Image (cartoon, rainbow, N blue to C red):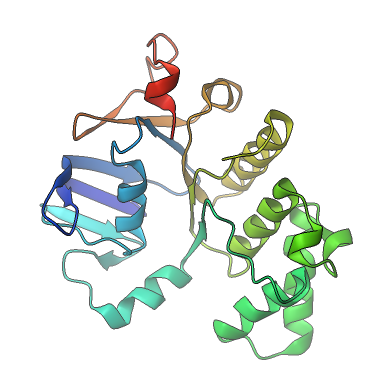
Length: 238
């Protein structure tokens, strides 16, 4: 069973302006998926429909992690989001507490109560992203890349089936961006599906995955030929 299954889905802004039409989009366990396209082409909007920050207008099918997004109730959305890890462009770490306390806050908010289990899980995910030495640091003491590693650790806390990342390498230097994509690729190889938007063409070549392109209100898979397609910098920019 697919983790995500969209068939002929239409997505519009709240004012009725069309974003994407007739979307067919499928995600299986462990897949590593890129979304590319121009600014405003619908990449982020598609992600937002998955974690239900943005509604789906209509479609033949829109399933995500066992939930029907065409009929989902508002009270079910927190349950849906607990099954996935979400990585935002703007980091969104709590500035008034340490890395450890940031992660502890998430676990407690999602029902964890055993202190030893919480401590073990935090150490596990920080080890996985190479940030154990930083667990007592405050967010402002971390570089942008280090903060993004913590964000990935936070996304992993509840062992999600799916990670959704909106421009996880935005504003990072090439070396740091490379380390972020490499880490996400390693996570996908362990069975967690990853969907990310990016404008960095070199990363697509270095860490191959399934590639979808948003263009002219359409979503098309270009995995087999994107290396031959001449995307301009403006087209891939986000």
